[in-house]
Image 1 (cartoon, rainbow, N blue to C red):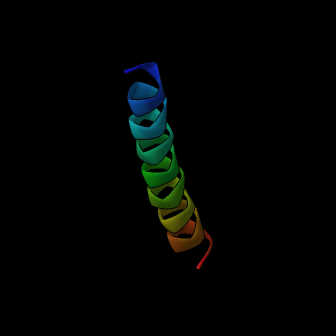
Image 2 (tube, rainbow, N blue to C red):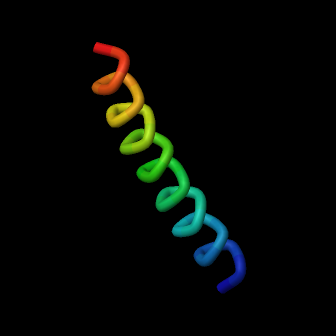
Length: 29
């Protein structure tokens, strides 16, 4: 169960990182 929660958490973090990156590059462009 802990591994599943860790995996889901890492996927959510990656998703937010990608969204932040897209927003930041949008501002610079």
